[in-house]
Length: 64
Image (tube, rainbow, N blue to C red):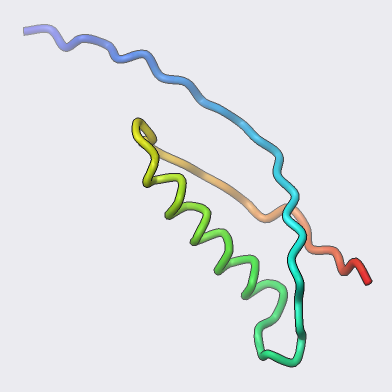
């Protein structure tokens, strides 16, 4: 029996997120970015039809 090919899409986004950061709370900007990235992955995988996701941190900038 032949398998039926399921059409797939790859969607690419660029996303900038500005957060409040208190350096005295003990997390480095890199640790905050890792934590936020994990949360974003969790939220995306809760959506129907998502079968895979990759993401990468492209930069951290202090905006004082």
